[in-house]
Amino acid sequence: MLDNLGDVAAALKSLIRRVRRLETATPLQNAAITRGSLRVASEEGLIVQGSALVNGLLSVLGRVRIHGLGLLEVLSLIDLLGSMRVRGGGTIDVESGGAIVVGNVRIQDGKIAVNGSAIVIDGATGRISVNGNDIVIDGATGKITVNGGSSPATLEEGKMSFGTGGAVEADTSVGGVKMTAGDAVVNAGSTASIRKGSSSIIVGASGITINPAGSGDIDLLGTVQFDLSTIPQISGTGLYAGALIINGSGYLRRSDGT
Figure: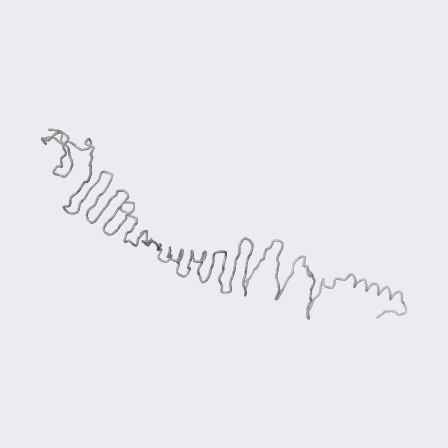
């Protein structure tokens, strides 16, 4: 309504001021919608230069695209009711059953599988399997099993055992290793020895000891050559010089020719 119908000029001036205010007004600068909704249908019709606050629920039917730094910060819980896919340098797929797939790695039910079943790490049993069960590492017992081939092998407590019955293990008595197959034993370390039953050959820093079983024989096949200068001499044997003699103590000696 006009304030003063008798003053037309004043009425026109007032009308012009009101129209100018409407033309230059920014009604959304400080506005609230308590009922109904605001629909923006144009391309990039809503532009936020600064920040936006959603105190409640933000429902998006379509896509959310982040430009610039491309950083999504979540300070609380992400509850995914569908699948998630990360594309770029690689992919991360979270499947509906709870499996997480990253390239050739699949995490599901407490297991990590690499390249199908080439390598499987089972968190429940503490086992690592390679190519099915070709190689099994049991974290609970510390046992490593290598299957396949003609003789499967196991490594447990420092001992490698084979399907043939043989074994290789550390030998603290000689500071080396011991290889066993039935009653045959080979030791290597500060001394080296070969044993079969009660017979043995022992090689030490001072020489070689041969122990035949019981009253068994020592058979030397082929040519045996001695350095005579290293064999002690004895006199009064009546033998020619250089003749070899085994004395009563079982030692090898050579005659000096007297």
